[in-house]
Length: 296
Image 1 (cartoon, rainbow, N blue to C red):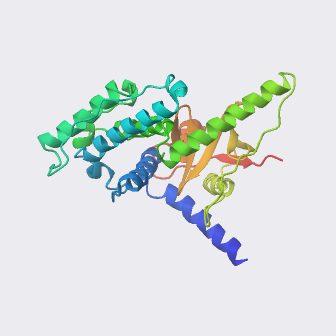
Image 2: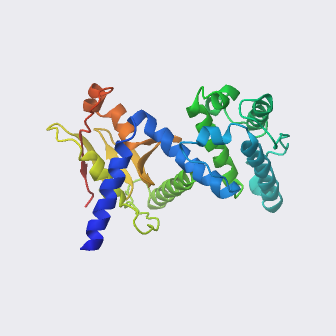
Image 3: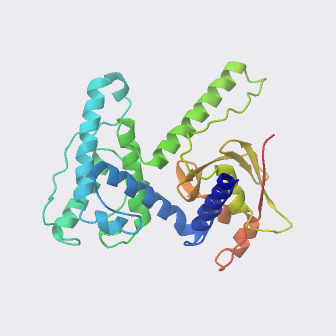
C-alpha cells in the first residue's frame, strides 16, 4: 500500500541519514547536540541547531539563565515535596551573569561560562568526569565534555519537574521498565522467570519503527560470519555471545543504545563490539557484521 511504501521510505531515509553524514564516533555527539538544542529552543525560545550549538551558547547567557531556573524549580519542588527533596541535592545560590551586549570570546562571556561551571560544581555537585572547562566551550577545546555536562544538568532539572530533553525522557522510560521487571521478578520468586513486558511509546505519524530501523542498519553487511544480535522484547536486545542486554531507542534519525549511565549510537556501539567492524575501524567503508533475530 501507499502507507507501507511511505513508511519503508521513511525507514530507509532515517537509516541512511544516521549512517551517511558522520563517522560513527561523531554521530552520537551530534545526536545529543540535536536533542539539547531542541530542548533549549523550547524552554527559552532560542534558535540554535546541532550545527550552531556551541556558538549559540558560547556567551554563557542562556546557560546562566537556565541555572537560575533550575534553582527556582528546585525550591518549588522542596516546598511541595519536602520528604522527597531530602534525597536530592537542592541548588539555591543564583548565578550572577551579564546578559546584555556580551561578545563571544570576550571577558564577559568567559566570566558567564565560568560562573555557570562554578554553579554546576558547587550547587549540583556534578562529578568531575562530567564537567567541562571554560575553553571547552569558548574555544571549542572539548565539545563532548560540554555536551555531557549539559545533559547531566538537564537530568538534574528533570528530577525537579522541569521539561527534559527526549534522551532523558527515554532514560526514565528504560529505568521504569527495569524497576517493573525487578519488582515482578521479586514478586514471582527467584525460581520463576517473569515474562518480558513490552513497553511502547506512542509513535508519532511517520516515525520509523525501531525494529525495522535496526534491521536496516544491520543489513548493511553480508558477511558470512555474523555478530549475533537477538531481539528479546520491544527495544531490548541481547548482543554477542554474552547474556548482556542493551536497550535501543530511536531519537529522530538516530538509533541510540543505552550504555551504562549514558548513550551511544548503534553504529558506534558496534564499531567497539563487533570483531569485524573493529578490524575495519578507521577505513572509509566499514562493515556491520550483525544479524537480528526477532523474539517469538
